[in-house]
Image (cartoon, rainbow, N blue to C red; front, side, top):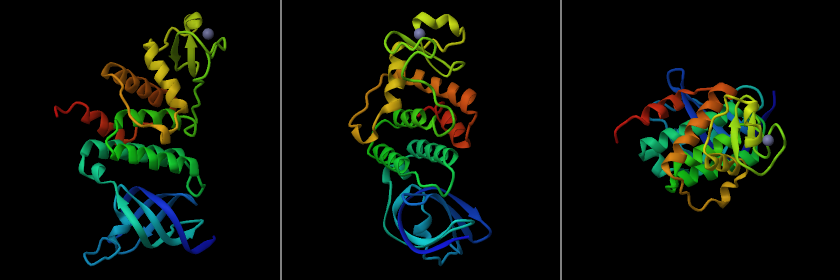
Length: 253
Ligand SMILES: [Zn+2]
């Protein structure tokens, strides 16, 4: 066991969880150490002055002790910010909770993932700024397929290698399939070419270059269905937060 005391790092709260009567666990995605679990003792007591360390949808600069095995500890935080629109909007809240769950599933704790840390911070900031949360979620879902162990070939036809043409997606073959080879998978998803074009673009999109998002409702619905099929059949996960998102879609609001 290695204890690193007095460490300063940037972090994003991915999840908080009650622990014992008065304690809480905070799962932080940190720039320097990857995902770490921090134990906050006594934070649920009425007089606790450390509650600001356990606020959901928060990021900032933290100080604490990093433990390579077991729980780490937070001493203080400076410049902590909460994503204001996300905490006040139940839909945005649901999208970001789901994304944070995917991050927790995709990465082992204690392994720095700076590129992914920056991606999730940028995506969360864009959602907080009012850009389309459904599409930003789709982009991260496409990009997270690789760390989640499914790496579809978005670049060229999985049968013949064609990189231009009309494409569909084949869950069976794990990638795009051009119209010349459609008979190779009778269960291909029959997607509109536009939907496939978006998925291919999402796979390589740089979050820092996203300025505006305008995707028509029909294509949005097909993107959602496609990623549901891939996550259900190829990744095999359906977090509670995703179930909540799906239920929310049926609300009349
Ligand atoms: Zn082909």
